[in-house]
Amino acid sequence: MCAKRAKLGTLITNPPQITKGVVMAKVEETIRIEASPEEVWEVIMDPHRLGDWVTAHREVEGAPDGELTQGDSFKQKLQVVGPSFKVRWKVVEVDAPKLAVWEGKGPGGTKADVRYELSEDDGATCFDYFNSFELPGGPLSSVGSKIAGAPATKQARDSLANLKELLES
Image (cartoon, rainbow, N blue to C red; front, side, top):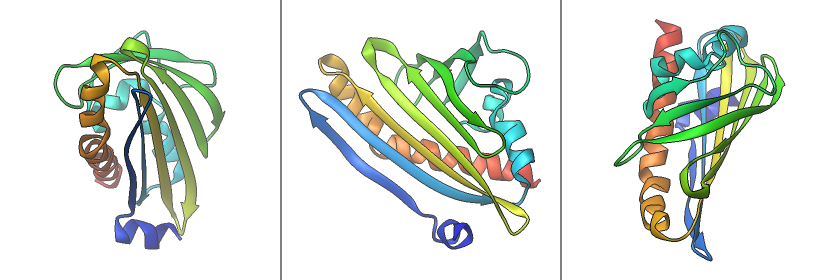
């Protein structure tokens, strides 16, 4: 299944929806990486390696060394479009090396939920990436609608391509 999805470059992006001034969007991506789930996990769960593959990443603060576990938290400075911003991430669920679920809180009441699902696929790894986010109304909703569409999709796709290149080289 993963090989077929990855070959097709499947990306599902729900167009940003604005309800009562809150921008809500979702990005889903699947990629096949020629590395074991353990090797992929080692990179994606090390916050000090985010700069190696996440295109929007600018810096990390207060992160523990090594692999993140359930309950760990840290701040990440990101830049998707326009000025950079900080998100406080908390790892809320872990089943290594198969599943990681994160909750993020950013400026002005922004929220994000990120889910990494890894599965073995014929000696490689199928990485299913899910990101849903809410940006509150007011001045941030107009900015949020610009970030939530194509830029968020491009960031996800480019980041996963970077991870694939990093692990396969």
